[in-house]
Image (cartoon, rainbow over all chains, first blue to last red; front, side, top):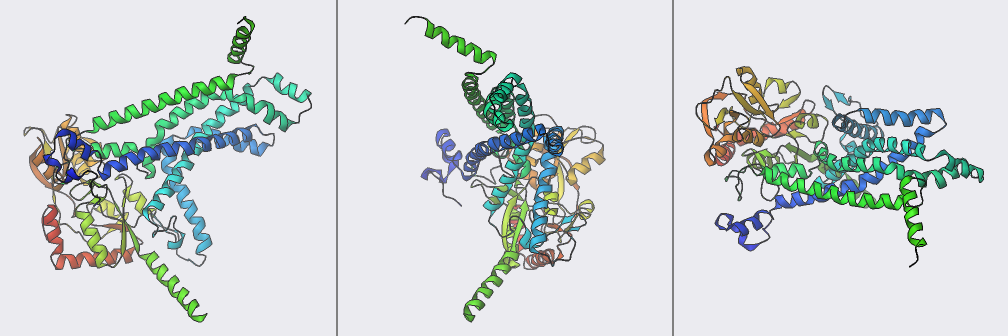
Length: 305
Length: 236
């Protein structure tokens, strides 16, 4: 057992409220709770850019002139957006995991003659397991976390693709025509004129997605990753004195109140950051906001100091 | 050169043996005294001690894994861990998808707990954990069932007045009844055929090892000592 952080924690029952709390809030179990905040933030930090990449790829594919690529892009957007998240998380992850193990099985155990599906069981040879059975638990956790990131990125990538697809079409046609009149190729006009201008149209939709993504993180537990909601439920549940040094009644309300504050604070900070980005992106754009900024600047420069 | 080759071959051999011998034990971690997460954040309880002892006797390296109760059987079948040791009662329905060892506890009674002695167990609202033998039993009595994903929430539902009573393993309710306002009501009900470890149906070899280890623990009385220590119902 891990030694307690404070020396006075050896007999919690005899402590006053303040000392009791300081011991209680530093148990190994609570450390797991605090670490899970990091897990959630890390998930968001990796998933958001990855989803944006998936979205950008999806939107580009959907706009492609080559028909099969366009079908693929549109199919990805339509199918993933249409399937409920929870069904996707339950079905897709198991299918992905089994698909990876099946591929490894084909490569590593070509001599295996027993069927892979026996009744309800899914059986691959032990060296094809992903990760290996003998791998330490943290490897399993990282693998589960990676599956979670990929699944989140695919789901939110589809929504982002739809947003970006719309944003690309919202850039005034005159801008592209001007670019072409200057002799830019299609690719040049896309990368130099269309992409820099579309973000301001995409931002309201993308910021919505970001907010939804923040709140979707409790789905992590479906994938076996112990997230903050899992820990809040586990820690808050009533504890009988036989099984812990810190017995307490049902405290889930307090833990969930903590989560509420965390999520609200986090979305508030996001809002501030997003409104700054919106200002930054509107500068010099052919939109109402951009035009207003241009006028403000012209006015302040025009008046004598 | 030759000895080097032999040496590396021997190394490879031992590596593959230790590879095959790591057994992942899946549990819920929310069902004291059978299994729970202790203050240090580790799996603890009757089944933790039992599982560690069984692994020692079967000479296996074991690793503990926690999993949600709802998906505990599907994840066993798809190979995320090798056995379930989570207070799971042996029932005919479960026998259709998994194979059990012999029971490591005798059939233990389930009991109703409520805030007052005069609740209506046949016509009232009774809480039980999803996909348990208790949930099946409540449905058969004609009471209105409310199901919860974790055992703790079934008790919280009674405390909050959402349910009139909770039906659960008596060993699980005992420490709660002794430390809170809840009381046992009505008669105990005998459900299930004891608690066993569950394995994939294709995994007879591993099941055999654990089955044999359980048998030796029954013979030399260590299993009874553990049962008494954690107060998980009757002894053998």
